[in-house]
Length: 82
Image 1 (tube, rainbow, N blue to C red):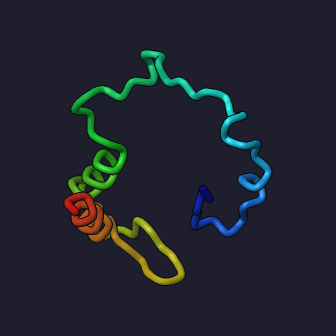
Image 2: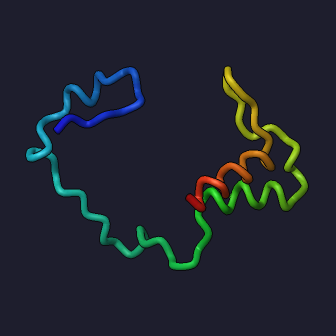
C-alpha cells in the first residue's frame, strides 16, 4: 500500500526503510498523557484570541486567502462538527 501525502518533496519518505524495519513507537510515559477534558491546542489558541478581542486580526495568510481569527474559528468549528 502506498502512503499518500500532500507534500511535494518526498525525498525523506522515499528513503525510509520498510515499515516492518521501523522501531516500535511506545508513548506510555505519564508525562506524555493528555489530560481528559483539557482543551485542544486549536481551542486554546483560536478561542482565546477571539475572546480576548483579537477576532479581526489576521491569523493565516496564503497566496489564495487571508483569514482572521474569527473566520478561522468559524471554519474550525464548522469542520469540527462534520
